[in-house]
Image (cartoon, rainbow, N blue to C red):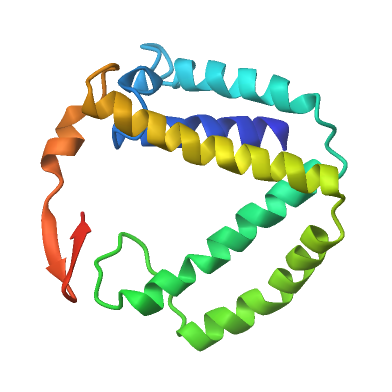
Length: 167
């Protein structure tokens, strides 16, 4: 499970770099295998830092929050019905709610019974993530770091339900 998490996390960092959400250095790959070596190194550093927190409650709590966030993303499907998506779940919104209701109940239970220390660590890590996003936006705007600007220039704005949506 650890190797699978490291691999998926590293490729998520690679994808974020390709979408210019992270500096372009995270998109560097080895010439021999094509693996994102900078992203793997960064994931390793984060995993080592998080390993000191103790995985008994913190890992379950953070996993539960992440999964609830993924389930909540289905509401975007209801809000933006005609938005073009690369992948679609072939179920109605009612079926998706029914499918996510039971696991969401268990995940919410894990979040409710978490200790205050676990909740504090999760809140701190969430705030760190939001702050990091803001730092990356400033770095991109002021050109403090090199980003994949091909993607930034390729984004087009569409009018959708009187709102502007970036594609």
